[in-house]
Length: 572
Image (cartoon, rainbow, N blue to C red; front, side, top):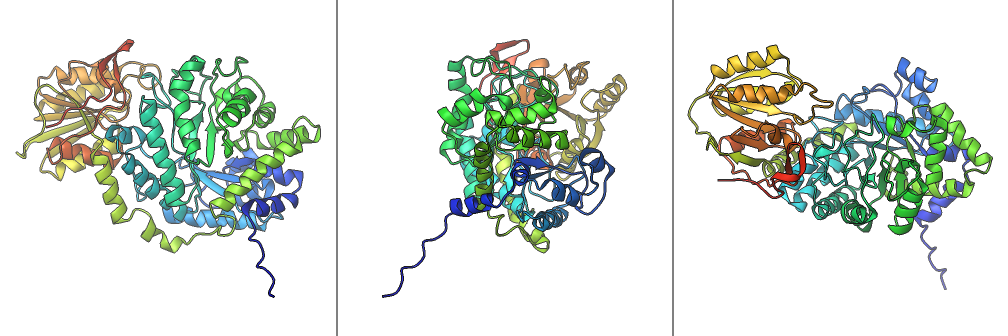
């Protein structure tokens, strides 16, 4: 009689075996997610030396043996998809050369819409609130699948998306259109769709953020420590459902928020450092078994109360598995090692966290297939089929809020159109789309806080054109973006010319509350070229606007009174 076949080795057995061969320092390294400046792993950069004490990204990997890595366009990591694929391979080679022989989980924030780390030729979508405006979960899943497959082709196995926050505050400076909606059910449905797109269709890790919910704040946690004053009942009704839905859908990872939620933890500590929130609520009540990663530890909100060394230790004590972007890596690495050696953090807890990290590396395939083929990028990233799909999806999102003067749709007659307002590339993208349709276009970009001279120039040009399209970007935000309310002045001065003026909010839809006299107003929820092409199609009547507001637009100064309600949207 032949012997029975051996039992297949499970991922848990593989991960447990890997864990057993690791030193304490190896394990702590797996709990850090780092970055380096520059687009090439072998290229020295003085900024790396200042932060890490070594000059090249490969040396950073060799020194810390981190579990994860993150790419940023603003830190000179990104020049093209092919370059990123090559860079990913270089980093993985560096990781495999260490005694640990463990590949990295490389991540980025490709939320789409207004938070994009990898621009064209990678496929661009309209972002979360644009999906919310369509109500189409199938399209949201398709977008996540395309985005995830393109990231995977570049060697990126984790997207810090989707944003699961419910944006119930029109004055939220940091979430806004990054949220799907103000409606918890719509946010939950869209979040689940994107989790499935990333994980089931693309085979990469999704990350729901920012737990326990960053949707009702007037402070930006990059600069200050926000407090969410929801009661426990409000949190259960508003913030919790989308995270519960993500967990039920099998989300691999959840990112913490640097926010104080007194109803969940009255200590005054941000959620990132709160054991009652991360271990008590997220692990205990919600039953989450995946990876908990902090939001960036370099952000002001989490650094406000404790020193950097203490922040790292407290985040792990609270229940975080991975520390993202530590601003003092040597100090924080040593603090965590010392905390384990002293018994403040148990090695058993460290083992549990590292086991989760290893299991995710097995699940997303990087453990046995760390490398990608840069030569295949053009067949996988920004393909004609993906770009066409993205355009069709974004076309459905444009929302016509107001058409009192019946200025839309424009006829096909030749006309002179001024494109003015916010965004160098955005105004030019729209002008290009309008020119393709026979318009003679002039561009007068004014920025987010226009000078009086720029406003006067735009008004003068408007008088010489038949139609003016003015793009606004957070014109409601007179605290940070536009302290002098100059975007509002620009719109009002243009309206005073008596010419046809079409106002378009290319970010948050709330701007109309600050110039209610505008007779024609649309919302695109994003400002990428794909969104401007959809806008041009609507302006010229090639497609009817089908987007519906996924939030209330409140009256200025009166957040409880809607000027336009959730679900509002005109068409023809």
